[in-house]
Every structure is written in structure tokens, then in C-alpha cells.
Length: 101
Image 1 (cartoon, one colour):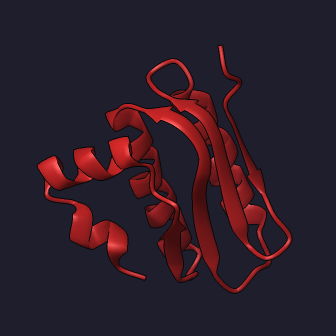
Image 2 (cartoon, rainbow, N blue to C red):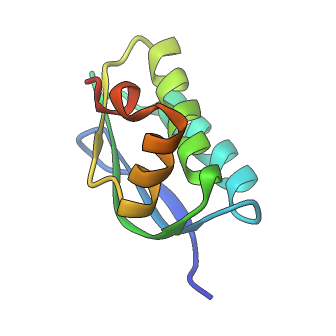
């Protein structure tokens, strides 16, 4: 089983990795929210390049992190959205929202 994690980079990147599903989502949500609150970077990049698999929970995490960034008055963008997350976003009508910088 792939370990899932979220960590904050020096330049305001929030790196998500591993499997994003109902088992990992709640803890990643708490960790990511705390990291966004403590980030001193002027903007936030949600980097999904190390996500190996995602259910709709992963998409929900991104939306929550976007809301956290907005609350912290930080512009947010998404980098390297995996194909499975992109497909869920398309079906859900969220593609435009996720592409919005």
C-alpha cells in the first residue's frame, strides 16, 4: 500500500502524494489545512504530481484546500492534476473551477 502524505514546500507548494481516498482523506484534510494556515508564502500551488490514485475524495481535498487558501487570502493554482482526478472533475462539472488560478 502506498503511503499518502501532504507536505508544504518552501515556495508555497502543497505536495500531495500517494492514494487519496476515504481512508486517507480525513487525515490529509487536517494536515493540509494546518499547513496552509502556517504558510508564509504569498500564493499556494497544489502539486498533485506524486498522487498515484484518487477517488472523488481527492477532488474534495483539492476543493477544501482551495477554500482554505481563499480564507488565507492566497491565490491558488493546481499543478499536475492526475487523469483520474481530471475525469472526476469533468463528470462533476468542476474542470473550470480547478483550472482557475
